[in-house]
Amino acid sequence: MKKIDKKDIHPKVFSLYDDYAHNRMERREFIEKLSLYAVGGLTLTSLMSAIMPDYEAIQVPQDNPKLKTETIEYASPNGGGTINAQLSRPKDAKGKLPGIVVVHENRGLNPHIADVGRRAAMAGFISIAPDALTPLGGYPGNDDEGRSMQRKRDRNGMLEDFIAAFEYLKNHPECTGSVGVVGFCFGGWISNMMAVRVPELKAAVPFYGGQPDAEMVPQIQAPLLLHFGELDSRVNAGWPDYEKALKENKKEYEAYFYPNTNHGFHNDTTARYDEEAAKLAWDRTIRFFKERLK
Image 1 (cartoon, one colour):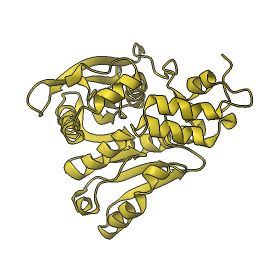
Image 2 (cartoon, rainbow, N blue to C red):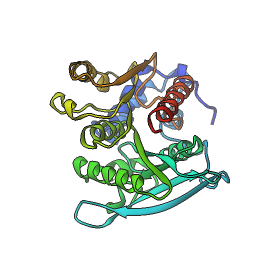
Image 3 (cartoon, rainbow, N blue to C red):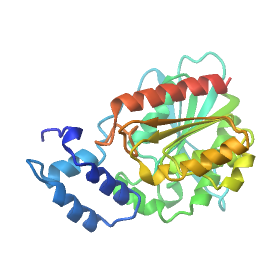
């Protein structure tokens, strides 16, 4: 199938997908509304192919010879049991490494987020990418089912599981104990909330993530690096109040809005991906972690 140029896709298509991906629209309604934009040579099938994830777009394969990547498990604070996670670090590391918790979107540890975890390892960190769907059997192999499964979990319970991942990584024998977090969408909210909840967190990088309540902001100790898509009106609506609270409480932060980008612009598996913005945001992220996780 011929690949669609993102410029040929009506902006409303990305809004529809955002509603669908965040459980505000059922699949049947999504497809019905999406079909209205299958015009001018675009078919419904080609539109679906463009905006739904294509997990062949992997930058760092799981068997990359430069990395040691494995699946581990750590204790969940939610009534016992364990959480599965990908643990990845450079094979040629000399001594201990600073750590990064990588937090997935609202669909479990899919191949894209696992890839991001390995990218962090390639940059010289030990990374952990947990799967919050572990108590339900783990990421099921496709995002539609993953979203449905994640809706069955309480988000505060999942937050506790990611805080436990921080503790696991901080105390890992190959980690210096200096740990930050990066998360995307739902994971962006988790990153913000970990900054609230974890005094020992050294840095937090939310990508287009929901914000904590203003009264929680005084608890934040970690410096923040926040990335936003300019066209992401849903998430961006909460930023002015959050920024006001950060300023009033003299918190350290940097915030970037990437022009003409949508929610999910860093995810290179869908048509929302913006290569230039994604590269810039990731470069800023790695530089930020290298400065803060010393």
